[in-house]
Length: 567
Image (cartoon, rainbow, N blue to C red; front, side, top):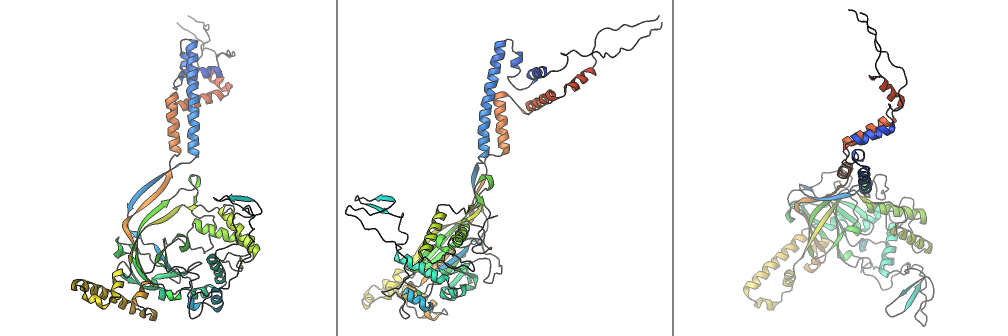
């Protein structure tokens, strides 16, 4: 029996409109199949009321998630930081130690015009009674009225007695203290001298540094690098890492803590060379910083008095700040801080001083004598009223942050904590023993023997001083030694340092984790749910013709077909 059958023909009739996947059908399918919690209930719930309730719950959860999401974005874009403090044990580099005599110039080396200005006699370096000075133009002080009021101007201030004073300015800028005015005018006179002349006026290294030991080994003035400070004149830095001619040398490291393994120096201040009108106290200015920092003894240092043995115990703290979005700090890139040359690391002080001097040169057409004077620039003379006003306005602008200096803190900084200790040099018992009269010989033998030992110790100290190659020191008495010498000891208290560092407190990974947590908590959404949503978007925007074409290629049974069988 032969059976002939025909293949089912392809129906080319148009598809019904409801067979294709419309956006509404796609959305309905997504709501039914998604893994997000709550959304399927808006389709599969048994009653309309339940579907509405589930829809409201989902929308409320989604709204609360959006609120938390905005808070997370605010926190992320505020760029918070965490600060950690670690204690690390390691061999430490010994810092750069700068010492300066509090007296900037030697009285015996003052030029004649300086002596006349300061009123210093060539034989007696003390000020005369009539000191000629260059006075500024002083604004007249308004006379008070009968009611106690001062005539004129803008601002009023009251005292406890009920008197009211009105001044043209917040304070009378021109009415200087005599000592301050003297020092400022002297600074201007010194600024007209070149660097070599100023170094010759100051105390010399061979006279100032008399004895030096480091880590129990002797050192000398050759281990100190000289530089010129605007206030203190000649200053000398130990362990700078370079020689006086600029050659690099290895830095000294700390091998053991304690005074015996630190720096010990004996300094001679030459009190007979002091200029009283410039220096009211005797002693040494000391500054401890890193080798890369430019020393500013007047800003960050401390003073030690003569007649004392001073010890300074050090602790090191390293600070690392985050820059960029996380904080206002810089490594100096793009900043101007070259007033003192280009060999020093960036610091906000260097940047501000450079910015201020540039503003003075630009606005006042001269340079402030208290800072390095650029080549080819005249020194400002505050005796000139117009110049004084310009200097005042520039200083006020710097103080009010109106110069647009943009001098943030350095991102990396080393800070030395200091613990001070003092002992008398020579001791009081030594001094007392030098003035023993004959009646003391009648004291008990034991006490007298003790004082004789102390006397011999003091005499030994004086003899050691007389061995030094300095005629002035060899002639010193014990009383003169107590007012001319400073003994300084600087050491580390331990071989450890504190490291304070900042790190981002809220990074991208933290943001994503919080977003996932909130989505999972309030809506049960995970990464898989997000992929499902993306698939829905792709299907939604897929061309309808492609969807219909895909449907035509599928096996769609349209109904029975006729066949003819031959038997």
